[in-house]
Length: 435
Ligand SMILES: Cc1cc2nc3c(=O)[nH]c(=O)nc-3n(C[C@H](O)[C@H](O)[C@H](O)COP(=O)(O)OP(=O)(O)OC[C@H]3O[C@@H](n4cnc5c(N)ncnc54)[C@H](O)[C@@H]3O)c2cc1C
Image (cartoon, rainbow, N blue to C red):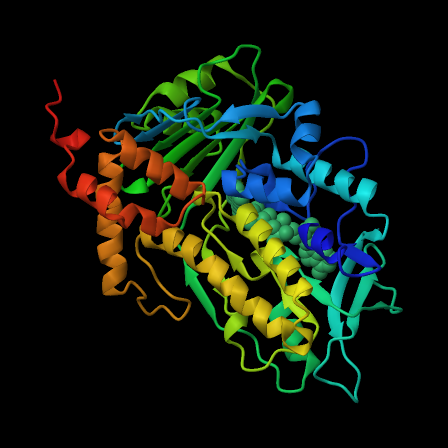
């Protein structure tokens, strides 16, 4: 939908082909985005970009019950000890379903030339025999009519694949022929398992957002207040140490986190959903930017290009940044070099969040099982360990870290001379006497 928003400034007609039927009465789960049952936080950088693309979005979300939220003082972070951010970092909180619902409403209200063709699955890219290097549209099939051999076609001047982690863009390229190859993939898999549950609450606690990391980041737990008095809790464990999906097991996992605040809060709440597990969480980068040849008029973005370990909450923000980059590319009229240029710009956008996500994940392995943890990676990882040890002791380092996490500044800000000095010489929580 973000791609549709930016395409609408350049093209007379934009068609969104979506395999799901969108919820029409109220924000709700839909099967095409199975991960949307899991806790989703939109980082502050992502919020800022969305507010540029949709100037009314924030106020409309707040009218629908989204909560104004200060990610600084109203949030509790736990990294080896409780960390309190002393600066305001203003934004908002809402469920992913509400966010998607409202973005679609903004599109329908302000862009009459965007059309949604719901319940249609894209199956192939199309090109013409006399111009095999140009994508001229897509072939699609209406759902529940799988036996219907009359596939339909949609001609287009530009095709953008934003079909998420299950994208078949690599196969589509190969099926086009003309020597097109599937991109190489880099996969860094921390074998992370998520378990999310939604709750109802009638009381307000001091923190609308709680994030607890165990030392080494092997286990974590987060809580987020949402619209309509709902809360969402996610528990996560790496390397097969998955949070259970039974009541007792879930509570025991929460209780074993290094701070009890999340467990205590869950015990006060009434669950309103089952516990939803999710394990498809590897970082996966499909290197479309490295392809020697790409057909003209075909772009890939979002999770179809790169998926991140969700613990860092970067996916939607990266998708928003990519949409903004596409907007800029279209304005510059790159013509036949658009695909190549956009994919290279995408790769630049991805590089920093990828670095942040993968350097923390242990046991880094590429798709061909060769180690990709280069020396500089392990030095960075050790430095990041050192940073997290300082967070509770140094408010300056903590603020910088939270800004990096929210993608408001580059991870290299944590290596600026002033932060470096503080990190190397800080008295960490672990050095303090425990009594
Ligand atoms: C467990 C988990 C937790 C996460 N938490 C966060 C978080 O806290 N913060 C954050 O920013 N990100 C988070 N993410 C990442 C986030 O979900 C994705 O990065 C984001 O949704 C990517 O958007 P997208 O548009 O690329 O893909 P999606 O949101 O997956 O959308 C793809 C769309 O394409 C449709 N589609 C697929 N194939 C076809 C087809 N052939 N034809 C037609 N339509 C098709 C699907 O139905 C769907 O609507 C999380 C991910 C996971 C797995």
